[in-house]
Length: 159
Image 1: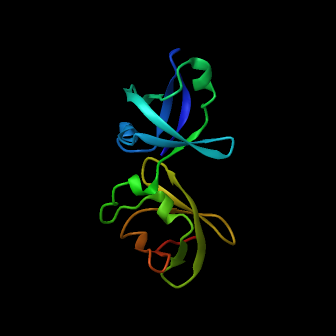
Image 2: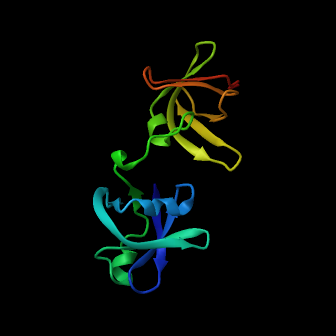
């Protein structure tokens, strides 16, 4: 959902880089999980708000700058069952990762390793015999996303 990107003030507030749209939507979830030293730890938000182009938050039990500094770089996640259902034709990136990507001619292009946000459109990055970047453009490039079979069908010339 985001990551702790810096400090804000001296009372334990942190800057948050949010992947949500709008950015402050990350504050809609009062329980976060922070990945610290490879372990996920629960954290509760006391307060938060949009600040400039980013978001700032104050977490319960983090009351000074030193405690907040310990959180810089931590990834932020929320429990899957806290997310609303995705709208028709919309997908959570985490649900697409690991799916097989198959060209309309039946050629297997690999599996979704991760996605990138480029500004113009999102991009699937596949891992297989080689890495491929495939624009996530519904109906033109992405023909079908079938969760039942775990296959994303694409029309993309990869050479």
